[in-house]
Length: 89
Image (tube, rainbow, N blue to C red; front, side, top):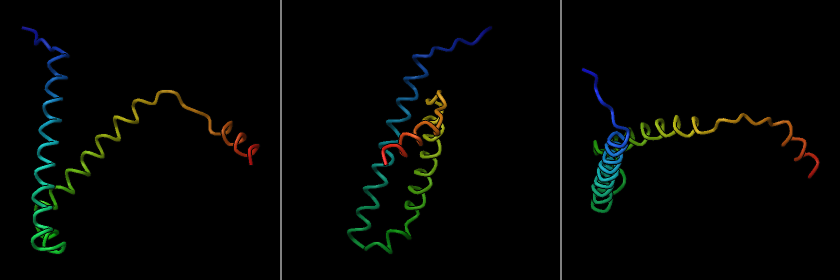
């Protein structure tokens, strides 16, 4: 039996994952903000949620980088814009 893959449901599932990630990040930021207000910056950095926040930000940035690079299809030649810049200067 062949497995049926529906693109709409896959996209909807990714949207739910994105919403859950946003809620999780906001929760971590609120806890860290509360820690910052009550104890200060040094005690906030000792909290293990700080490491989780930094790690999740790095992973999200890495994954976003691969998406933005794939969208640019046309390779532009820098020589033309370089000559234009020299002419303007």
